[in-house]
Length: 259
Image (cartoon, rainbow, N blue to C red; front, side):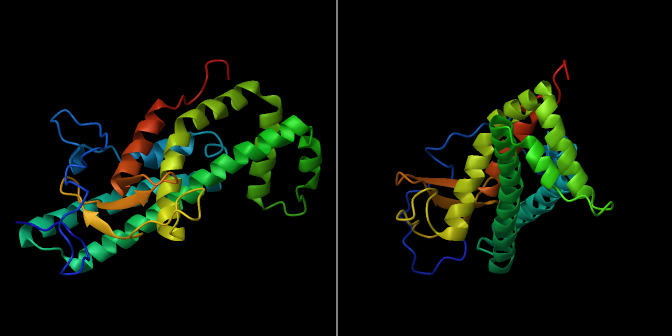
């Protein structure tokens, strides 16, 4: 029998609340009834090319590059995850070296995605606050203008001006946040459990084994036991987040007809 523990001590209790099929979790199945699409069936361009066309990413060259990096890294890590699964099945034991590498890459991808999405959320919040308080002009006047080669400042200035004057732009940002917030919250849950060893919003809720993952038998991603602030545990892997992000991007309106 194949043991799907990753980096586990030899005497670990096999009686776990987790089932290999993610029992208790809701997963969309593909046309063949499988919980994950095969490697060849994944459209990696959805994140790599689609994320950068969302507002704030589309009109800032450097932010668009960061959004693209999320998708590029996803494709690379997914290949390593399936490689880990293949090696695991062939050897009928956990390939520790490969598993450690996939675990490290998976966690770094989550941290990177979290920062990209948090920047997006914070910019929306800051622009709304400035608009509501009448502070846009003051903010614009405070932006530095002594470096003509600093495109980052120009991108920020243009975005803020557009946010002030273009109602359709603001509407699209709100529609985008409505779709992307669940992915942000999922990524936040992942990141805070793994990096801070607490549940989001509750420092006294401490997860049992932050960073400990087990090989998912369907896609090779590592299943982590993540703690919610209400004390509820949930098994989630990096692939779940990537698939959720792909689904979100496909639902976000790229532009409104009246823009």
